Length: 195
Ligand SMILES: C[S@@+](CC[C@H](N)C(=O)[O-])C[C@H]1O[C@@H](n2cnc3c(N)ncnc32)[C@H](O)[C@@H]1O
Image 1 (spheres, rainbow, N blue to C red):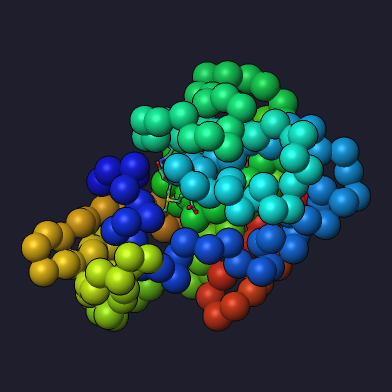
Image 2: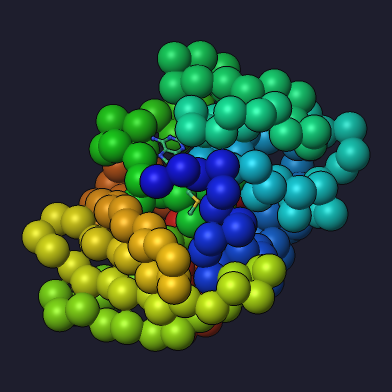
């Protein structure tokens, strides 16, 4: 899985930041002085959404080992070995790719955080649905739960992209994150946050 092409290959519906997540980041930024933000699993573009809501002087750090370029919106790329403390951590569509040890680092690394994930896991039988990408390519998305992982396939006319992520339970995530708050939104999404 090449995460440098995420926006080109994934269903367009996954790309924008949800209203619920944007509103939570916005309210945290209004109520606190946020000078530093770490975008965990931010990819090439995630924090471009945050620029709309975060003060232009705020420094945004990208913690994403799979992104090759230095996107223009970041101050610096950081690794899991850098033990800085950030005013805010954001993790959009990426928590289920992290190891448990990495998730446990978040409450120490981030004074506040906003994370999203799904609420209910897919079934163990494959479910298919049609999708289009941001650049109007059509494909079929297939997903199923298989033991502790979720298998996800994106099938195009000329190629298939397969990858997996961890099926973490919300109660476990809450515990690893130090008993944070939760807020459900849309059909099957949930925010885990500390403000
Ligand atoms: C589904 S993409 C989401 C990208 C971005 N947050 C967005 O919403 O546009 C998942 C991201 O998680 C990153 N990722 C995967 N494993 C990671 C890890 N162990 N630590 C940090 N980032 C990771 C990938 O490189 C990828 O950019």
